Image (cartoon, rainbow, N blue to C red; front, side):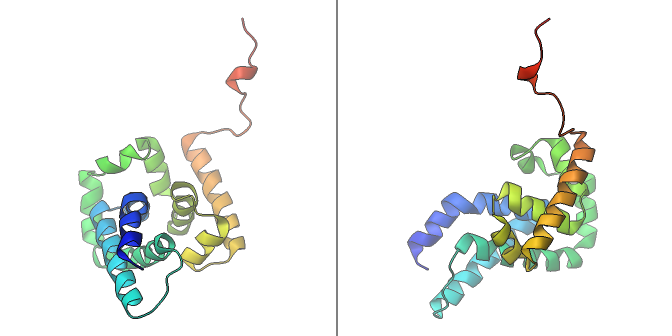
Length: 167
């Protein structure tokens, strides 16, 4: 890993990875800290000869693990954060009702949905990032879509606006 790789990551992937980890962890500052720590670890490993195939995927996996650990240590902060509701940065990525619906998902469903839809990782990459099977990703994603559809009152069979007859 060289300086160019890191600059490309910071420019192209860092904002999305931070937003994804923030959605999973519920805290943007925690997400930023976790992603920065993961990036430092990636740099250190590369300095010792370890090859990292995908910096974005590796950093995401490590940041998610770090944020999980941080969540356990900072449970009181999370509760206060929810009360204060300072997640204005996340509303740039999605509407408030979608953010609420995603936040209401169980942790694993939330992780899978964020990695798949926000970071646009494919099933294999999502499975690798979370250390689960591709089948588990697919079934968890189906459950997450169902829960999100119910929370957002989305009917997959709704009529397309363009198919309606003119009055």
